[in-house]
Length: 392
Image (cartoon, rainbow, N blue to C red; front, side, top):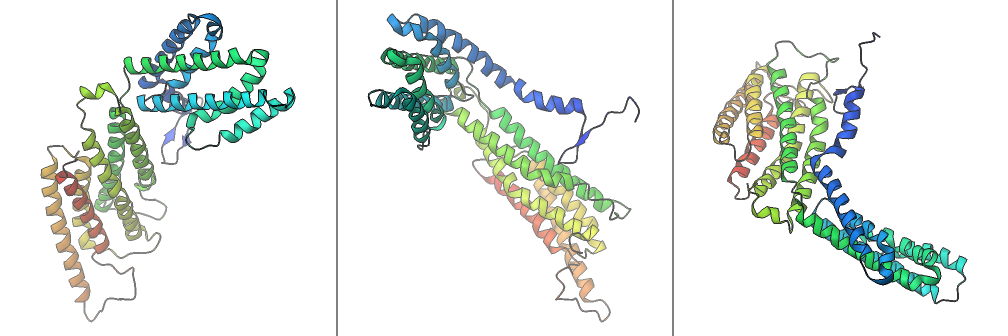
């Protein structure tokens, strides 16, 4: 291998990544704009909480180093998640401190109290609804017993008050400094899933139009896309959930005009279309490669089928509010009509062949490709329904 050659690794979707690209793919998620903003807000909140905590009167100010921790645990990417995690953390702290005091007033010796604080705290952490706060039940109990010691009373109050102060500061910082909205990320996820489907459909139509017949050693070019379609749709759904969560109690939604309901309708349509695209790819693999079972596809149908698949790709490619959608629906309707005629003609020719009767016992005998026609009609119907839906 020459010195200029760079080895790459094949991903599950069939693409090749160089070492530099793999490092970039590993590092870039940590450098996304919303995460950089979150890091800035955490730094601001922790500093402010530590400063304010040191101003508390009496011995409360001696525990100001817990205030930045409270700010840290309260800051999450979305406002509602911040509120939820903050409440869960404070509840977990309260349970842990309460457990520690039960052990302090009990006759259990110190070593046994330490073991019980960790063991019983871990059991209490299994209570439903604690969420992020479950980790702080055994920690708080252990801190009060070990660090608090003879001064457990002041430590317990200072620990809880400083954490609560930090939580409050973190929530205010998250509210006042650009609370994130993930609607753009959600829209980008939908676009990526749609592009994957369009690419797979285009590849299928190109293969049907190819003059050279595919060989067994030349696998379908759309296989890698079909493997990734479900992953892309699931990822888009996860981004959609994040976007919906980020909108709750977020003041930025008042001036953000993004059509979130339209995104929801578009994604719902893609979720219904995804298995249909996979089904079409499997049927064409059977027709052209005989994998996993041989399927007979009449030659006269292929041209009409390629046109119909191209029209379906245009439908999927057009956004729900795209001005091209109406024309794409008309083109798809015409292509499906031509494909339906070709299917009927193929069956008529098969049934009228000189003395030949179709083999009804052979499920692979599908001279007209009714399954493919039905699948393409499903795509058309889903897009048409999405266009008419008031939520799209």
